[in-house]
Image (cartoon, rainbow, N blue to C red; front, top):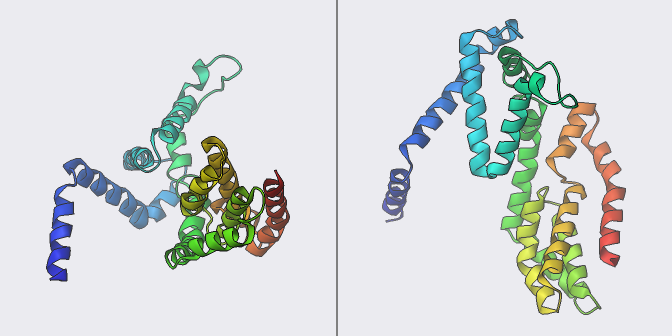
Length: 261
């Protein structure tokens, strides 16, 4: 039965999870619960962390670096580690890069124990606002909106000179209406437009570059833009609609330029 098959699949998947992942998940839950139930004390002793604050903060930062490495790759994690080391090694740097450095407690107070670090405005906006727009965009993508925009762009521009590249630009722009992720845009539209451009005689590098440029500009396309747009509205204390209005002209200009290159 379906229920029995689901249970078997779940059991099989769980059996392949390494023990270290369970341990890391346990530490992650511990660090989150510490902040959830101990935020009053953390707030009262702001800037003066006690030993358990330091331990939990170190665990949180290490877990975040590991999650970054697994989700995005080692590059961003290495950059974060280098900047972390720079915070402590400032006094030993060459003169142009030297500064007095920070103590471990001050660093952890800023990064992990305040609302200006990990648990700051970017995370707040992502959890409360960006999530809803991403969910909406994913729903549209699952019901075939991306394929519809591809077909629409190809039907309108496919017969013109350079139509394959122009269709890629328009398709990525239309996909940008509901997707604030340039990567998702490339995956959705590039699957069709890049092979089409190569079939029409475009070199592979040119086809890929055209699609990437058009999909990257999709983050400027209102109404659902990149996460930075929501953070801008939150930091400046303005309505998100004002950010959308300000982005409309740059988005149009960028796609106009790509269309006629």
